[in-house]
Length: 569
Image 1 (cartoon, helix red, strand yellow):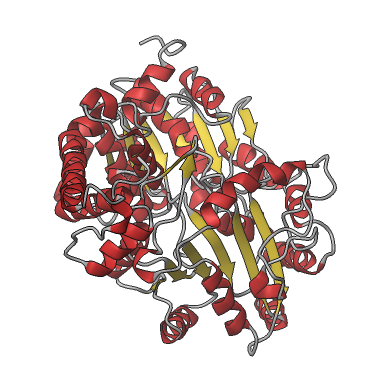
Image 2 (cartoon, one colour):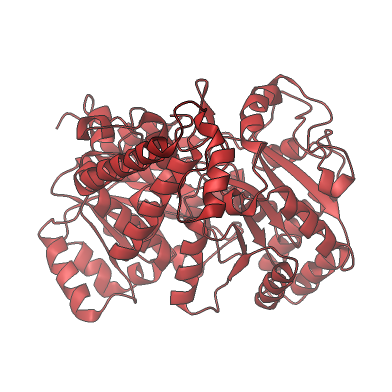
C-alpha cells in the first residue's frame, strides 16, 4: 500500500470521512514514515485516529497502545471492530484463557492494534513477549501522566522510559490533550523520543464560553438549578468534588424535577457503564460525576460543563471543560467555586511530605487561584498557561470580557454583552441550537439547520430509537454504532441505497455492511408511517391541522407542533 497516496481512501473505507481534521494528516504521515512524535491536541481533536489509521494501514504489524483506563480501551476496541479493524486488549478484566489466546494471535500478526495498561507493560514477562511481536509503533495515550510536573502523574508511566532501550527500532508517539511546555519537554525526555515531530495544536477553543462565579454553600445550589434549567433538553456534565457529593447532587436535582444520574469510581463497574450509556444515548441528559468521568467520552453535543468546586489545576479544568462543544457549536463552561475549595486544596498540599511534590502542588494551586480571581481574559490565561500567546486581547466569550448568563447574572438573555469578529461567526450556529422546544416530551431534540433545511426531529427520534434498540441487542454502547453527528447527517441526507449510505458522515465499508440494510428499512418504515398519516388527513385541509395517528397522543401532538412527520426532509 502506498501510504503517500492512499490516506483518504483508507479514511473513507474505515471511518467514513472524506477529509482530515487540522493536523491529523501530518501526524499520520509522520508515523507512517516511522518517526517519533509528541502530539498535544485538545479534547475532541481526533487524537486516536492519528495512530489508529496508520496502524490499520501497516498490515501484518501491530501498534501497541498504552492507555490508563479499562473502559476507554474496551470502547476503542469495540469501535475499531465496528470499522473492520482488528484490535484487542490485555488487562486484568480479560479472563486468563482469553488473554493467552490473544497473546498467541498477536504473535501471528492478527491485530493491527493491541491495547495494554501501563501496569501490564511494566511486567517484565510482557516486555519479553512483546519483543517477539511484529510491532509497528508504540502509542502512549494520556502521555502527561509520565511527567511528575503533569497534573495526573502516575508512577507506573515512568517505567515506559525503558521502551526505547527494549525496542530501539520502533517509533514511539506520545499523545495528550493538556501539557504545558515543561511537561512536553519532560515527556520527550522520559520517553527518549528521537527528533520527534512536535505537533502542538492551539489551546484556544473559541466556541467555549468560560464563566467563573464565586459563591458559597447557600447560593451554589440555586446557581446550579438556574444554570441547568437554561440547558433544558441539552446534554450537561456536572463535576462534583467527592463521591458523597455526587449522590447528594443527584438527589437534590431529582427533588427539583431535573432527571440526573451519577458516576464515580466507587460504583460497581456495571452500574457505571449503565449510567454512562444512559447519558450517551440521551435517555438522561444530566450526568453528575467525579473526575473519574470523561476520559475517552466521545459525545459531541455537550452544551455545558459545570464544576461545583475549584479544580486542582488549570490543566484539569481545561481538560474537563473541554468536553463541552466538541461539535464546534457554542457551549458554556461554568465554574461555581467557593473560598473553602481553595482552603481544602491548600490543606492537602500542606500534608505532602515530598518537597518536590509539594512544590508542584503549590504551583498548580497558585495558577488556578489566579485564574479564578484575575480580571484578565479567561481564554488568554489558559493559552498563556500552556505557552501560547494569542494576538487578540479580548475574546467576548468569557465573563471577564463581557459574556453573561441570565441564570448567573440576572441579565435578560444569555448572550455576550459585546462581540468581536471571532465570536460573531458562531452566532448563526447558536441561534439554531438554542431555540429548544421546552415541552418535556420533546425537549431532547433541538432544531438543527443546514443549508436552509431544518432537521426532521421526528425522524431523528425514530432513528435514535433504532440505534438504542440495536445497541441493547448487541450489548454495546449506542455511540459505538453511530455518533450523534452521524445520526444528524443521516437525517439530512435520507439515503435510499447502500451506496447513498456510504455518503453519510461516519459510514465506512464495514458499518455500511453491518447496519446498512436495517437502516434503510428503518427509513422506509418511517416513510410508510408518514404516508399513513397523510392518508388519514383531509385532502382539502393542510396536513398541519390534523393530528398524526400515533399510539402516543402526547408525542403525536408534539410532532404536529414541530412541523409534522412530513416536515423538513
